[in-house]
Image 1 (tube, rainbow, N blue to C red):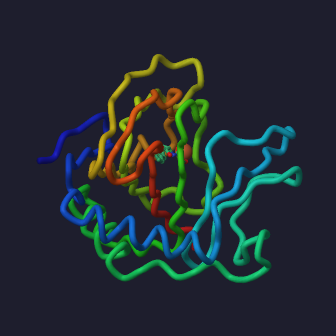
Image 2 (image 1 turned 60 degrees about the vertical axis):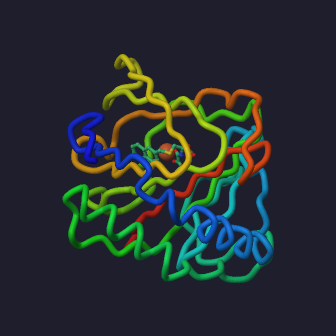
Length: 203
Ligand code: MD3
Ligand code: FE
């Protein structure tokens, strides 16, 4: 089932649903090594979403700015590797979205507790925006907002639930997007949160 959300943005509903437990087990092992933490924006605000990474690089933010870093600033060590199952599924999803040459080397893992949100932003810290971003959602549902190339463009809303995968490529790659505050709820696989994985290729 290939549902086109916008030009270049392909939703694969439930694409990784049968792998949920295996994927969340990999997340748990990443988190043992590189824990979730609330990073600080260059403007000095703590993000409500907690993050960690696996891969050759991780996305980080602090007062110095946004960047990809080979080392986890919290542990001083390299990030743990991306498990083969995760890269394999991300590559398969990218293929379904029409990207046959995707080799993710970053997986940013976001944990949204109840009330956590992500304001409208663009993902533009990656050198080559010809590569897509593949996102996988688990646990509590979230309302995802998706606009255009300008912050002022109108947005469409879309609910992302457990096992949904979205491939963001083409003109959608640089579209403004965000997450509304996660509503209170309980999910048997994640308890009181939403987990989102985004796979990126940064060099
Ligand atoms: C559209 N994450 O990590 S996932 C992010 O739910 C991020 O954690 C949100 O935005 C989350 O940067 C949204 C969907 C998503 C991810 C990356 C995108 C949508 C995107 C990149 C470009 C366009
Ligand atoms: Fe984003």
